[in-house]
Each structure stands twice: as structure tokens, then as C-alpha cells.
Length: 67
Image 1 (cartoon, rainbow, N blue to C red):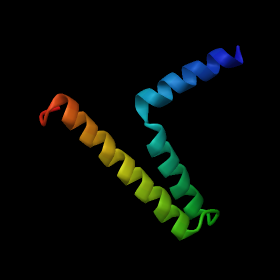
Image 2 (cartoon, helix red, strand yellow):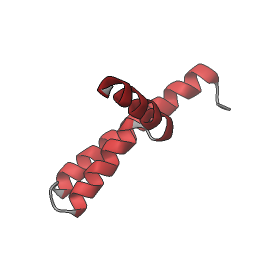
Image 3 (cartoon, one colour):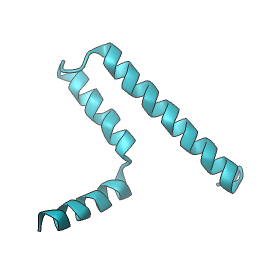
Image 4 (cartoon, rainbow, N blue to C red):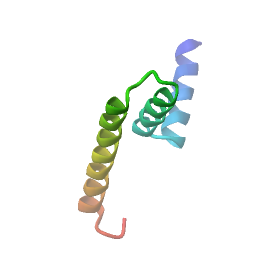
């Protein structure tokens, strides 16, 4: 039962929000509450932006500029 609920939750998480973005939202929330330092938040943000840029580049390379 738990595995089934986890599968459903993962399906909808992947569908509505990427895991990278979820990590960024979590880091931002923790920074607001003071749990994460600003330098750690910057590292998470740079990783998010860099990985998203790589994904966009790969999609353009595979499917062309109009994808």
C-alpha cells in the first residue's frame, strides 16, 4: 500500500514540478526560516540554473531550435 502511494505521489510530483525545482523551493524555504545559509542557497540556485541550462541545451540539440 505504501509503495503504491509513493508511486502515485512520484508520478504527480514529476508531472507537475521537477525535482530540481522542488529542491530549489525547499532550499529557499529553509533560507527564509534561517536553516540554510545564504551561501548554501546560492550554491543550490546555481546548481538549479546550470542543470536547467544543460537540459534546455540537450533538448535543442536533439529536437532543433523550435522544441
